[in-house]
Amino acid sequence: MAKQNKPSVSGVVKEKNKTTRNENYNQYVKQVTPKFSCFKNCVKAFVIGGIICVIGQGFIKYYESLGADKELAKSYNTITLVFLAILLTGLGLYQKLAKFGGAGTLVPITGFANSVAAPAVEYKKEGQVFGVGAKIFTVAGPVILYGIFSTWVLGLFYYILKQVGIV
Amino acid sequence: MTEKAKRKSKIAGKQSVLFTNPPYIIAGAGVAGKKEGEGPLGSLFDIVKEDPMFGKKNWEDAESELMKEAAQEVLKKAGMKSDSIRYLVGGDLLGQLIATSFGIAELNIPMFGIYGACSTMGEAMSLGAMLVDGGYAEKVMSLTSSHFAGAEKQFRMPLDYGNQRPYSATWTVTGSGAVIIAKDNHKKAGNNEADIVIAGLTTGKIVDYGIKDSMNMGAAMAPAAFDTIKQNFEDLDVKPDYYDKIITGDLGYIGKNILIDLLKEKGYDISSNHMDCGIEIYDKDSQDTHAGGSGCGCSALTFTCYIMKQLRERNWTRVLFVPTGALLSQVSFNEGNTVPGIAHAVIVEAV
View 1 (cartoon, each protein chain N blue to C red):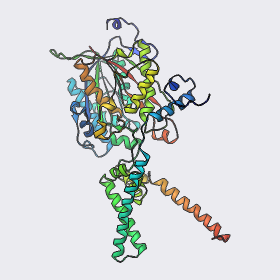
View 2 (view 1 turned 30 degrees about the vertical axis):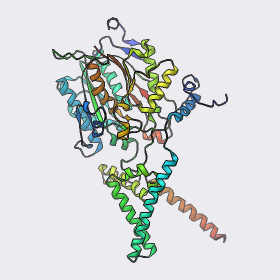
View 3 (view 1 turned 90 degrees about the vertical axis):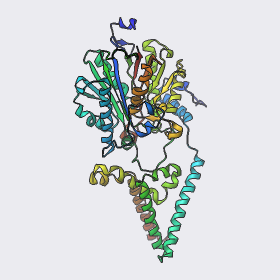
View 4 (view 1 turned 60 degrees about the horizontal axis):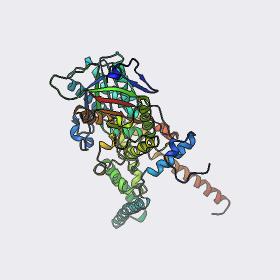
């Protein structure tokens, strides 16, 4: 059978074949489920993410004005942003910011700090070892693992390219 | 009723039961959290607690406390001590039913722990009524609970993790509801309120239409509600207008529309008398709950505090109460499985 152009609910109720019925149902559900506007979300993420970066830039300038060189000022900035994100997480405010800002709060280093601090708060009640210790990286773990793995792969490529004299 | 009283068999149709001696629901009590207390039904709950921790140190203990208070409250309302209850049938959403086990331990009542996800209240009331009508108990307590934070931890992300909930997501109700089902009516003299009986039930099957999105549980459960309600109509040979209200547990706004669409296709129009507890319990505009409320406590609270009141006041005389559950776990979800649904229907009448 050729694909129906509009999946309707009758294609769900009347369909005898289970696989086709489930496909029809999933298409029908897609139609009736409201979605966030991607454009609006992108704008909000851009603004909030941008503000976080401007604040970061402000910190860099401030630390430079105190006499730190560029690299050191950057490190201080990272530490400050991570501290602020953890503080906001502990106060229960980061979640509210993320609800509005979406990826704008996820992508900067603050998002990473939140993803480590939130499980720490949640699992503290299960003890320091099996709670915080074992579960602190439940959200951030994949990022750490695959982050390190991809740098290893890139390092390998770099080594090979260096050996053959391309770089 | 007279026709039903003459019945010899309790078995009706394929999946239904019509009781020969319909058991009475002699009392119901609901304990709710702060957010639920601020919702449209807030003033009806027996107890509303401001503290999300319920004076305990963690979410799991908090939910146990919640359930314990609901059990104590329903005993108080029925004017009974826990030793007059023969069986307790209950469950919750937490792994291995720890909210129930730790919550009701000190009540010292013989207990059956059950899991039906958010359909647990329907399952508990079904089994409780069968125990009573079957003559195995004079009085049974059916109860369930859910806690927003405990459920988030069990099924989703740590509470403070920053993410966006989709529009189709539901908000787990913090609350517990308990009823006492009894063989005899325990009404005091001079009370003009209607008696509430469980006339029958339709037990649901596991229904899976291949939905994989765990954040759209309304869509995952609607086919189960559809299947059970359709079966109830067929087994009893009735039409939707047989009931004053057909009340689903926690389909939410998306699931409600799907259910109505599905039943319409089968020739049953329930659009005028359908109601969903998940829609009733919160005000979605001011409380930011997206598709509605969910969790065992959603249907249990709405039933014990709102539906029972409507029946007592004879605003409704017969309702079909259909709590709905999504039978997933974090493991089944991670392993790529679908989200199967289940729905248990209980026929509740004011007599």
